[in-house]
Length: 395
Image 1: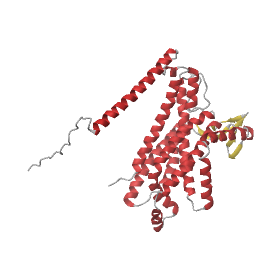
Image 2: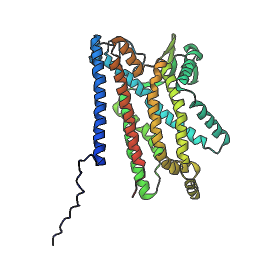
Image 3: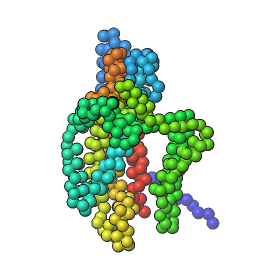
Image 4: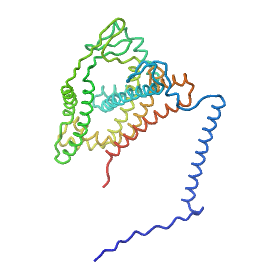
């Protein structure tokens, strides 16, 4: 006996009539899009006409020309003989460098501040609240000027540099710390990347295991072991040499080690200290959004307060924390453009130098806008994906 398939009845066909609200809404949207497109076309054509009337060349062909200026800090090889396009890449990498480190540091410091503000210790809670209220109400630009002046004007010279730790020196030339060098560095960084991938896979397995058996896997301790053991194994397997390069005072400055310039140190300090105050408030509000009964229920089965916070409260608070935290990450990345005020060669400073030399002002501004747009959209896409991943799924 065969079963007949019943098709769902089709809805009534749309009547293309002006009296239909859906038809009117569609026509209005098409008209608005047409007006926007017309406005964009008028502005673009008028701009090109005015540039042509003044014999100002347009286009991005200048990116292949020789730059002819030096950049103080670069994560990749660069010289004045490099092209303008290469200079833009150097500025973009400098922006990403301070943004990535700033996001990580502000998240860690801000989370600690947010938890401290909810502490039952009166002194810790009040000091955290005082820090938050002061730092988030002082403009970031003023904080950058303060930290830059503190490093360049107050700190002693290299010969009288402060040494808070062995082979670590702080002077008006910046921060000098020991660093590794040798042919095996590529293997070490590859090992770190591999360790991070293994930690992500291990965290996924540990969560599945805990859901199935209820047993907690020591993920933090195992992650630390992987971060140390995997790079060491790859270094040993490569057979290449590696050594600790310590900064040594030679002449009027230090040689060797890793150098953090005053501009980079001031920018990073200002961004982290300013943004961490806002991150702390986001974390505090997220924790307080979790019902008090969750604390009491977890305490009733004998969990210590620290484990309650880590295993019960924070996972629930993350659903409230992530959306405003995304805004703080975007703000930190875009606020890094203030680096031009203290001389750090980010993409804004480098592109400003390029447009001053070439006169390609519109193209230069478009490059800056496109760079920040791509970086900001990348952050938003990742954070939105993570937010969907941890959100509650209705059954």
